[in-house]
Length: 120
Image (cartoon, rainbow, N blue to C red):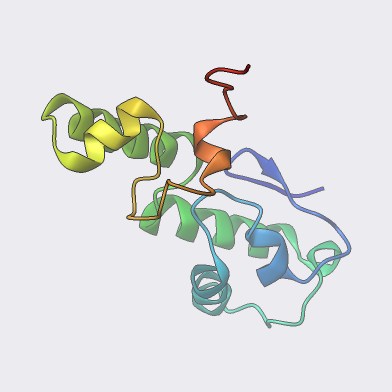
């Protein structure tokens, strides 16, 4: 089972589909990597040679920020927003929606279950 960026790729899937399991590689980046490695798009992972796997791994390592490094950078960016007390940072601190969604109704994913205020 080929292992790229610390992730085991599914053997029975196409290469571009399997690469999407790597955090930071989406559909367009996966196609870009496969084309840069000179591998056919409809090739299954189990049909890849070790040389092709190494080429794909080298391209991802050199051109993309993936997995732990990307997660660390995203969390540092959010922490910076919270430190400078901008609007988005305060929404992250309070656990509310950040991108302008309404909170009078809905937003239960971010706010958690309903808290009953008072009952008679």
